[in-house]
Length: 195
Image 1 (cartoon, rainbow, N blue to C red):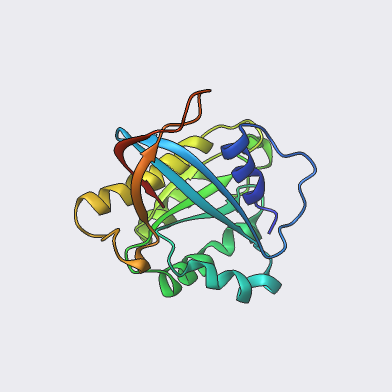
Image 2 (tube, one colour):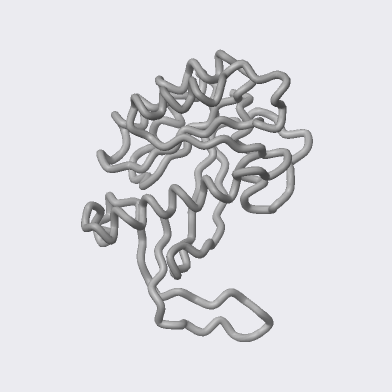
């Protein structure tokens, strides 16, 4: 709770910081089309509440997820200490091949840091997940983290580890549509994927 998940999502989708953000109650949703490996990927992102009282509600959103960003606040030890619990939930409740990135948010507040980069990096390595730091305020690392998780998922599809044609994959494939540029939205025939 208070790690900046909603602000991170807002920065990614709108390219600006969300001022006056309050705690998420339940779940919020966002989506954005990005380019990864020459493909259009539509990320459909669920921003779940981090507060313990909503945990039973948010746990149901792991099912069908192809990827997860587990976000903590680098200036808040309690936030970081909950990371292992959220990781356990993701591994228990989601598909076995879920792509997970640990995200240390608020890296712009270096003078208030209580969780070192090295400590978080070691934890990620011990738990076989990727680790990145971001700043929802400045935008530092925000797009990178979403592109990395999309690339991880795409690599699993290309390696045959995820079958995007199964309902439980959390992935839907189809013909990509050109983004509206004032013209018609003709189908291009290129493959796209929604993770």
